[in-house]
Image (cartoon, rainbow, N blue to C red; front, side, top):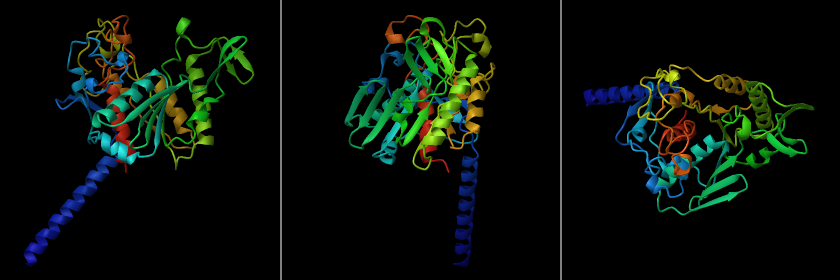
Length: 353
């Protein structure tokens, strides 16, 4: 009896110590450093089970012939991510609202999450409504709203007599963000646009009007304005706050040691290993600097490195409305890389210590 009790107690102690070690490892794990591994159990869904997916992201439907790119799973170094469970997500978020705020990369992530959730419950009742720049996907049985606010710069662009003015120190659109339970912000993709695709004619800071200015300086000034709005208007006890991070493009093969590569065309496998030869884009430093100075804690979805390794994940010519015209090495095929962004978001929302 005594020996049995001793062995049972010793086993219980070992189990307790193991759990403590696992928790310690998990709490110290960087989910954004690791490598991509091939996994036959992926992708998490098939786009044929996502009837509302926008065609520009549905690379398979648009004729992409290779089948490996959706089957890579992100493996963080030294720990593991919980596999996404859409039913659990909806149960935990019951009656709540989650909103992505940003440009077309936010739309990419929003579309990914709605597909991940709907594919978990294909018989679920839903509504999809767009009003002005806001799209709302509602799982009616759960009262969960997954929203998208198309807001390219986060700060305001105002039409005036002189033209369209990008106001780096003004945020009127923030009225839409108040009272949301989870907010995921993003901006960067449009800051270096010039010519016809540029969405403003002048930049204003205070009372000063500029025809142009250093785009990185403008980007940081806008982020500081956004940070000030968050500090003044968001209660972190009531709202989960995230910043998506910088989603990279792959137009220059030299950056992944393939100088003859014509952008992302014909790329079918990730960069091997955990290091991207071309390094991080400078905008990453700007984002981290601004977030570090905020009073309100904002969790950075630091998806840049893991996405840089996925030169194979873009639509290339199998996007853009399925016309096979042009070369899109900025957005991401679905199923694909944004599903991992959302898997990490899921992990941070529900399983982080």
